[in-house]
Image (cartoon, rainbow, N blue to C red):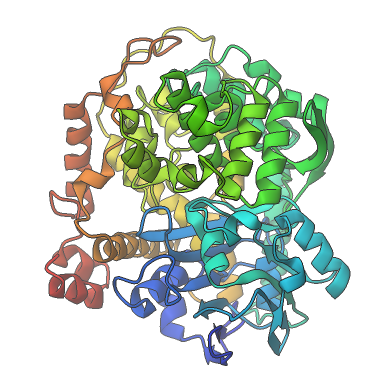
Length: 633
């Protein structure tokens, strides 16, 4: 028995139907914690080198952490991982809701899928009962509709993840959906389920988790809730959720507008957190054990139709409301709903749609190629593109490949404004005067993603204030000074260790980021639940180990992997911001190289961005060092 864990890794070979249940080792739990750590370790050890993302040998992993499912704030996280359809390298995506706790209560810390089912299938897990069932009646259904149908057929007490038709059709940025609005959105996780003919995974668990000091854990968990409720930002942040940051991001000139052509939108008050509350919101919606419900369940009505939808979150607002320039929160929410039902990541979808619209404006794409006129600010254009992408119809077949591949095939200069890193579309922050945030995107192990390191506040204020304090401090929209490069790589590395640590622990980081809930609370909860003494510094060292491991995985899997893949799109160093608080600001290519040089040195990587043998051995990855050495890396 390992305290805090269910104690078992469930493995399902979809090709043969063989199901096995392997004990979780103490070494695995101690060295990699769970969640993101388990995903990285299993992928590196078990994926045959040079396996393609769409190959049946690719591995799909769902993993929980030691804190998942326990009595503490926001302990409902599940981590998914695979080889990325978007980048060809390491991929993971994190999701809230209730699926992870259910998987642990059923007796499993992680689920590993290999092979391919012979027909559209649903994996059914009810404690010890594990079955591969036909999902033919559900194939082709939307992700939200499918979950509703399965709950009707199986029972409301099942926790279910689904894919939409985008995952079935191999769109590189298809997502996983759960709980009618939670998504594992990034890196094409849903695509890999689709290649395995898995439409859904349904879990019900009735077991218990062993706790080292159950009375102490209960007292500490209750105290943790009380501390969260007492934080100054609790009442201010919770009503609007992540959408509440829209005003501040726009005021500091970091709001992506018109495919990141500029960094401030005049219509931001029509698409901000207050607009969500006033125009959409019916009720708050929280994940498992969460005291700060960032989900906003609401109703939208537009010229194209109406829908009930969870959201939009800030990132969706930024990519559809800013980058695609949709002018009302109702239109943004409807695009959100279309993505949810089709099973598309809203971030990548917004990025791809904005790129396509700019291509059309510049005459690189024609009406004949697209099938209709495209315009920024036009909901019909966006929804047309989303449906085309999902079903790979017409221009959608190209766009379903993501902006990297699509721009390489289309050419004509479109590569310069294809906003991505390593093939993953950029999220909701324009960074031409934010060197730390720019570097965070460049070096994120999955491609351009903000969840690995959110350091925009440090760029704009030089402080380590939590998000709530930054937002309430506000700005007046005055001209921003040119940012300096000093200390940025160190700040990024610090954040890249702190934020992903929560993905390994199995709980949400928003209480830390938005409210400033102290990290020491998590170290104490970990000790009471697992019986293992680990300080927060010890947990951070494990997070660092995982960081080097994921980089090593991509180095092994992506031919020619290295420094050139860490560069941002040319727009970000060729074109200064044309308006707003950061008017005229831009990082130069030389400054970007300076950031990378310092970052690589601090990481203990080569000048080409590969972890050195000495670094890998220092963090306890001797076996990984041997693999890279054997591959000439």
